[in-house]
Image (cartoon, rainbow, N blue to C red; front, side, top):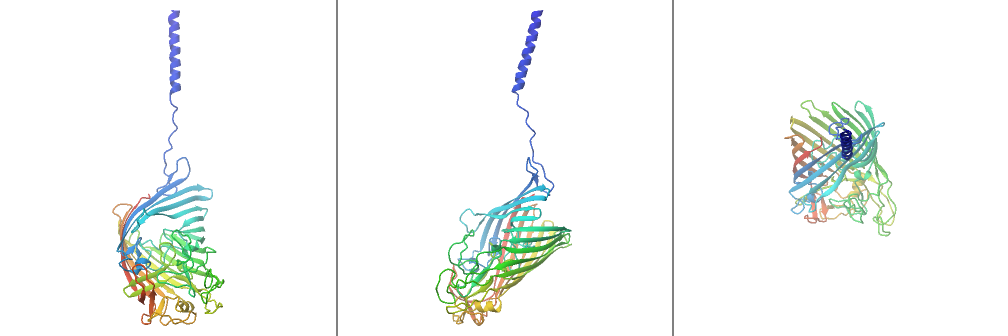
Length: 525
């Protein structure tokens, strides 16, 4: 009996030992998986970054477009090579493929929401032969009412919401490319906000012309600096900033805005420094007047721009709207549709046989009025412009909407600027024989010469949404450039470029019809 009992106890002990060993070999129970959770604090599409209290929203779109008698993004043929309007320079069809990715990252803090936002993309446009290009649209931080980084200008209002093109006169905006800025926005409640900002001056800096030194050409602004692709500075030659000196201070922008159920309204103002290079030759001592080296520069001036805009939500159908906004500027044409920012026009040109329409969006003109060794400085003569844009949009059904829109802009050179523009060897305006017999000065000019111009356009766009987040749109635009030179007394001298031959062209008013077909898949929630 004792033997049996001992065997049973030993077996039990062995089983316990084996069971303990097996239990020791079992894997440790895993921690619960941290699944992605919806973040409802900031609206649809946000989710928590696992393990944090930070929310993120990922969005973007993919786009195909085909432009007719226009460049990418419905850039009408009134500038650059396409404005030369000939078999070699003006392609009938342009295609563009583009995609954009955005990230909106937000965290609640004791000072309010801390936000970081980025948006960048990639595009390819006819006739590029490589894989296209990468570009950045937005990269900013917002905290306690402050905004730092690349964003849309606080001068901008509603322009672009009802149309694809930004190239038909009137007002404009920094749009997709944005601008670099530092701003503070105060929120007063009931939809009222006020913002003060300092913004990158180069995005609103048009050309300055030293009319006593540099030859002005149709379609370009001369100067001592070349701004290459990517913004690098390289040597001497023509450029889009002409004889503008290096930037010294940023633009100062202020705006007051209200957004309520009936719509939105805004007034804004901007101060923009206009700063020229030296009178005459900028770098090489010597020479004869008025283009000799002087080492002296005209006094800096402050240009400015004022705007007002209104959007009304119409009662006829959800989404129906009407808007109007206008800009008045002196020495700050970059706050209108003539803008040196990438993809916007600074100069206009449109040839048609023996005729040509041309306009130069100059912030100012200056020159040495002395034909001898001395200096009689003209000072900076600033250019004035006013512009207006308006549009109306109607939803025929929740999936089908159309808009009508238009813009109008007038550019005016004062009497002193006109006299400098229309005299001397550097002007592009000539008499019927091809000569300019008037010496460079600020009291007289070639008879019939007037650099003032207008450009305006109207258009219509229709967008169909067959399914949510898919836009299929068609837009047609008419644009006209009107010059003020007397065709009975003057001619525009052209040195020749691309497929357009050199010669004298009769100043005229020219028009362009263009269209675009666009398909865009939006995939932000």
